[in-house]
Image (tube, rainbow, N blue to C red; front, top):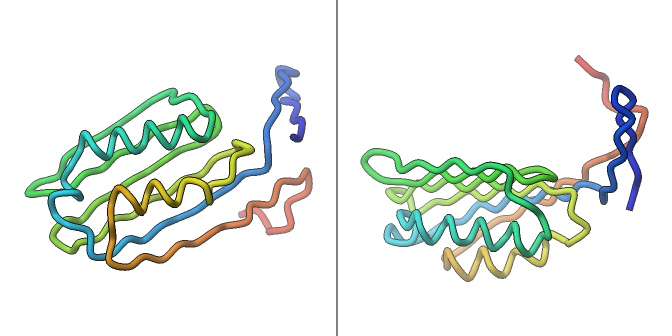
Length: 135
């Protein structure tokens, strides 16, 4: 765990380095991709496994079909977007939990049951001096 101090309020935070994973899921059935209650349950279970509190949730069904689910976590976010007509689902999990997001992969794949998928792990750099020029 790292410690971060907010210089304005001198508030103490404990956090692990950020974990970020993006799943692109293909060949997902329309029924599953339109299952708002199932997707909400999955998002909440992911937050629970990450030992994170949900501080806000937004969900929406699109016309004619599809689901958008976003959970703001105390440490970051979970976003799930579905395109049932394409059999495609995007899952984005960003967290500062010390639980590896790799442990969540099984739950995501089990729920959506895609015929194929891609995943992208993004290594987030946390330092006091950014190595990327700020715009």
